[in-house]
Amino acid sequence: MTFARTTTTFAPPVMEARRWLDGVEFPPDRPLINVSQAAPVDPPPAPLRAAMAEMVLSDPAVHLYGPVLGLPQLRAEIAEQWSASYSGAIDPGQVAITSGCNQAYCAAIATLCAEGDEVILPVPYYFNHRMWNDMAGVVTVPLRTGPGLIPDADHAAALVTERTRAIVLVSPNNPGGAEYSAETLRAFLELARTRGLAFILDETYRDFHSQEGAPHDLFQDPDWADTLIQLYSFSKAFRLTGHRVGAILSSPERLSEVEKFLDTVAICPAQIGQHAALWGMRHLRDWVAGERLEILDRRVAVVDGFPRLATKGWELQGCGAYFAYVRHPFPERSDTVAKRLVRDAGVLLLPGTMFMPDHMPDAAHGLRIAFANVDRLGIAALINRLDAVSP
Image (tube, rainbow, N blue to C red; front, side):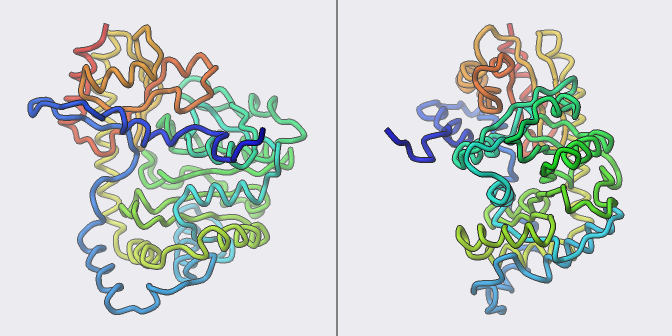
């Protein structure tokens, strides 16, 4: 019997978790606290919405097909701003625009892997990376992480085989919240280069890194494009989630292969979203800086409030950008715990079983809290509710 590609993987986790809400009523004095999804729920800021409205009315080009690899002005703006922020040298020809960062990942894997090839993902991993690997016939090789959910390049080296094609890191990390040091990222780049692999670095959450300045020096390497493939998303920085705008940075040769993939699945990225991203890059730097400070403050609220849960057996394993990844103290598996928390605590979050292979013991104990849409008062309420139901 043959099976369709989509049957090789699991259901979309966020959609699956939303189904747990069916039939559950939340009283007015205890409304649902939804910390399941890592995406802004607010629309873009008013000035950007106004600019987008003007585009729709006045610029015919935003309603037409555009270049497959994206708006040339946006590619050039990314190259210029990235070169400045990373103190590196990036050419517009090394930048392509995609329909969100997920598509950027899919495109990268399509240029790298054939049936049965392997990709190393640290666990807990971003579930959509695993899902695409499954549907592409690519074997996901899980890399266990150490304290603070930090991966080790030497441990990754032991997993490399003749079928390995890439190592993937996400920093700041989804789902773990960990920020990988410049030394860690450099070690993985060198490992990939030495073994003839691609190093895919997803920096979707780079705008909310706690470190001032560039988090790494990889773009200062004059030969970065022979190994590094950077992914990025405009969904978080400018709240353009529904407009699906991402980016992939790599060599022009690889982007010519990416172009084949993009032309086949979307023809071109949505024009309004691309123009909005360009306008945001040029006009919203201070606004994004303020958003970053707010997210960092929420991170502090989680860290400061967690000791009370620690006395009940909870462990904060990672915290940064939009996420806290925790180890729960309950005897049940994390998927059972997550479903029970909807009913018993009015909290919707995702279990560790969605972020690593089910057979791994750590999957049973982890929970991801996406706190980007919960302010300090909401975080305090979340901690109170988890405390109240803890053993």
